[in-house]
Figure: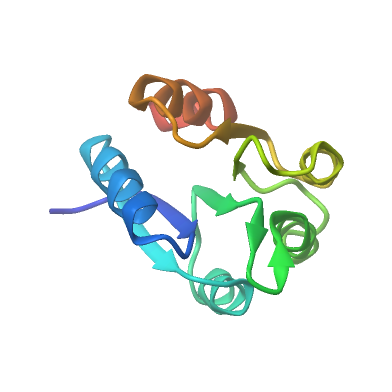
Length: 128
């Protein structure tokens, strides 16, 4: 199967990865999975992604760090970036992620239709 849409998922929960991968592949995305910011940086330097989806809180870093880094690597332009948050996450950190390049957020657990519309809102030209 040939993909022309590629998404990087940065999560360390296997259940969340399975849910995201199933939904995104169903929408025609090729999915690349990493578990932390260092792996994400390596993947971003190696390949081009139409979208990055990352947990707000990662081991040792936050999606804020990854969003800032990705934007710097993209000459200051925002990278299509979706943050996944939980009710327990700090609102200030989520707001900081949105102010530093994340295009939108989705609350875990998410509904498939919400994932679809959040992605379409961030990257409408993908035609999903």
